[in-house]
Length: 157
Image (cartoon, rainbow, N blue to C red):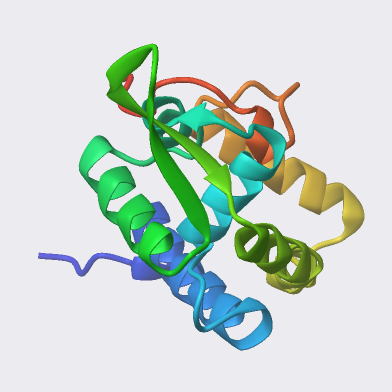
């Protein structure tokens, strides 16, 4: 049997890219706030009083992960979570002062991390790379800002 060429395997290369991205994140942005947590801060900065289900969908986290991460962020004082008085089954989420301050401190560092991630690419190749990622993930190319992305990430259509 011929060996599998990992250097030609999209899955293997994506895993390595994820490792690289995670390493850059913790060294440049934060070793206290994870990238998914930053995604939550970013979304809530644009959408105060968002319900937890909408938040999870917007940042592409499943329900259990969203609940766990939001719970941890609430305990750390980054998010305020209250029952929706109109529907007690729903949680309304807002950033606390600490959450907003954390977001504003990390946002510029996140941009630096993203630039470091793709610094080996030309400007045209960066746009093409993002376009390919969005195409693979079925993201509307008109929605380039994370906080504007909507949809069910489990949709396999």
